[in-house]
Amino acid sequence: MKYAWIERQGQQWPLSLACEVLRMSVSGYLEHRRRRDARKPSRPGSGRLSDEMLLVHMRAIHAEVRQENGWPRMWRELLGRGHRVSKERVRRLMSPHGIRARGKRKFVVTTDSRHNLPMAPDLLQRNFSPAAPNQVRSSDITCIPTDEGWLYLAAVLDLHSRQLVGWSMKPHMQTSLVTDALRMAWFRRQPEPGLVFHSDRGSQYCSHEFQRVLRGYGMRSSMSRKGNCWDNAPTESLWGHLKVGRLHGRKFATLRQAMDEVVAWMTFHNHRRLHSSLGYLSPMQFEQRWQAAQHKNAA
Image 1 (cartoon, helix red, strand yellow):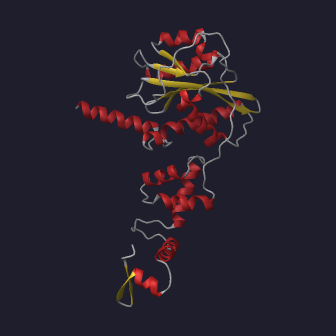
Image 2 (cartoon, rainbow, N blue to C red):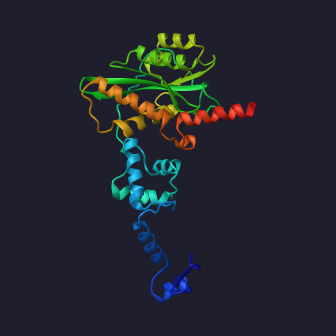
Image 3 (cartoon, rainbow, N blue to C red):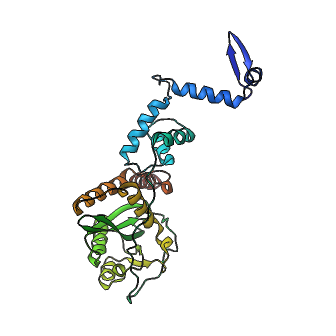
């Protein structure tokens, strides 16, 4: 950049020489020019947005995703909508204008492994990237406070695309909570026998009833090691995104209000949320591209 030229009164001068004569640094001049250009209004057809117009788009995205995106996902969202902008510019604009992802918080532990029920071995060994859909699924339970009491949510995640394929919400943590989520996931996809179903060692998943339903669908049970949440990391991450990105700071007067918000978020998660582990695609986009690639290879 120091070999660039600037033009004044019909004559060209090396940028480094001009800055030396004016007793200023090249980086200081470039920063001045960047700020000057940022204040200019966007010109139709120029392909470049002013900071003011870029902030309009960023605030719209921030509201659309309910304040869930940090700057990496915000940058990807802008690129996906045809706005050519640098990562650094997005990061620089977000913080001073109050555009930031929701903060983290502590959550309630719902796993109770203090029981004498049979437990399955860990068949995954933290291999969370199956080659195709309907091969490996993970499940877990979380809870959401409301003025009417706790709402318990069980979800089933297909690990190939990180798509939510089954869920159940009830005001209790009885075995029917997880069996209903399992049944929903099976009826939506009806996978071939042999699918690995991974969970923690909670009494609901170890129960005779749940294991009977699991075997009836031809699925193999897999469980995390004792006290090791990283063995079920994708589902733990799912709860973090739900609670930090959507529920943190929210108060629900009724169970129904909380359920409606959770369903809305799950729809967003499957269709719109960009996942870094999927190359910043949504679960639905990732699976659609995979299926298109399979058809192409088979042709």
